[in-house]
Length: 389
Image (cartoon, rainbow, N blue to C red):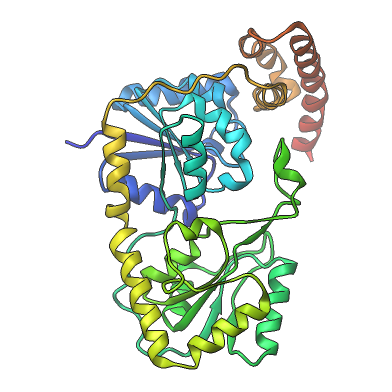
């Protein structure tokens, strides 16, 4: 009989959630829930309901989806009653500072960035790389390759500049990218375009102007992020040409995934490969074979399963939790389901706030309590007025 796992997601988003559910389901009896479904529950009520579910179903392992959702923080995870706790992050390159504090409540960190897995290990965490893509091999690829170069993903101004330059140089590029917050192409349609393509173009430079960072990362204009788009190309038997990222250097050589830094270098690489059917076939076969042999779902999850099943190492202990993190946690607890009609319930959440700050100095305690009181009265009025509109 398989052991039971509960995955606690922020909210429904099939494109990102389903691949993680499928990976765990290969080895575990997997349950999942969405915090967004607990709309009319405060912090304490959410924790109690989840713990009741865990107890009723005999669940011993919980996985926490933490990115961009501060409600699932160190204190929330501490209050969930399971034997083993796992942090899952898909965007750690943006959120490492906050995630690495949250991770101290967990036994294992799974991250979609190979470099961040090393950064966690550097801090003493048990951490493994686990990609967030659908790691199934597509054996029904279209024989006719109608598209020379395909790009899909978010379109930033810098990416648009590169794409426009490639087209201007006479390369037949099909762009099915999307603007920020715009709807993405349905997965079935995307896979059809991929299977009809000769080369997938991966652009790894990511903006940091919108990064929700609380330290030094926010001062940098951009970063080079390892993208799952590379693996998607390999699973579908298509060659990939990628903008540089240090993460992909850990997995692929230059004769598997050719890389570039500038738009001029990109055009040179694309023209070279497209100009020789033998070279294109060589890159495609070597790259796709490696991806399918090493990163297919069951294979990539095997080391994760072995790590989960062995006795946990001692958790990382922090000297202290910084003031900025305590502020975020306190605000999320207070603002959960806040309205004038629930004001009494919210005031009783202060016992949780006191636990958060029990090891802090007087100044930190005073500031967080004062801010929490102001937040209660201000946001209860704001959210009550919004709910009546």
